[in-house]
Length: 80
Image 1 (cartoon, rainbow, N blue to C red):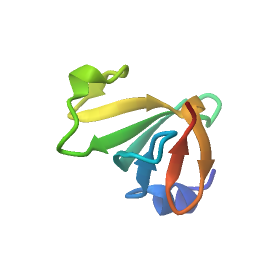
Image 2 (image 1 turned 90 degrees about the vertical axis):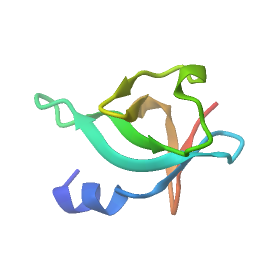
Image 3 (image 1 turned 30 degrees about the horizontal axis):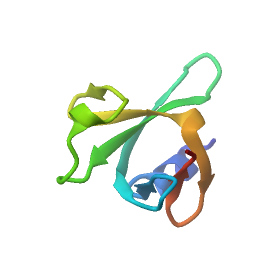
């Protein structure tokens, strides 16, 4: 993934398998050895309680494993 493509994804809405908005992509964690995206760092919607979600928080952002991404279009869709 080129830097340009990565920047193009920032700010995209992230939705769960039901189409509900989780938040917006703020950043990504990348494995420096492989170049693979490991986690999406998501700025959660204000009405969501992070304690009720299965992922951890880092610096105020939800860390969502990248392998949960089903597809990327105008929104980033997570699989069930």
